[in-house]
Image 1 (spheres, rainbow, N blue to C red):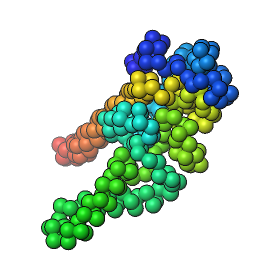
Image 2: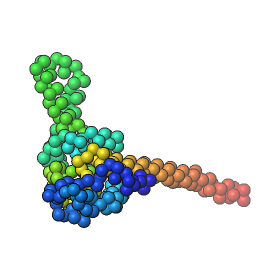
Image 3: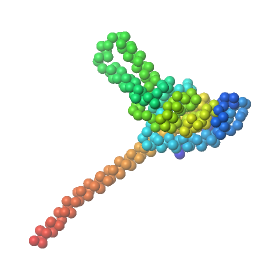
Length: 269
């Protein structure tokens, strides 16, 4: 991948700092390099390997034309995740995760339709004629729906994958994804169970810089997937146009060929 991350980039961002040793999850042992001053240090070579594997898989998902949902409701991750997902036109959840957001998607779609209908109503003349109290209630309802569903307004079907910061905190999202066999890509700290993610990325999920460097790397992989999809589409369209031209040329040449023997017969007569 052109999107290269070096060991030093991860080190500078503090990706290697885990939690206090007493807070660890023993299932993270394969990703832990050592203990220093009562804190577990993550093996950044393992992080790099996991990142490469994750980015390659997520790129293929996007290349096939499907969506990746970003999930991060912790304070230090919200802004980074929302910004990157927005840039890539991908759905995201940075406020509260609503139970059933994936497993009860039909109900979620109803809430999204409700939001759309309020937005539509606001543009109509009838809205101005509503009583002040009614308008206030509508705007409050809209604000509430926007806060919770703002990042998924364009989601018409279930996402093909989830990118999560802190699987321990977002355990409901993880459980719903598992139920629906939706692969989970996640930044996993030393206090979490990496087996909960299909593509765990061992790293510090508390520090702003660490979250930023990992999220941006995954974001670049998604961007590459989108570019390759566009390229594939252009190539297919080009191929189709060429085939249509060949077919049109053949069709144009056919009457001329059938007319030729008839002309020869006339001359013989």
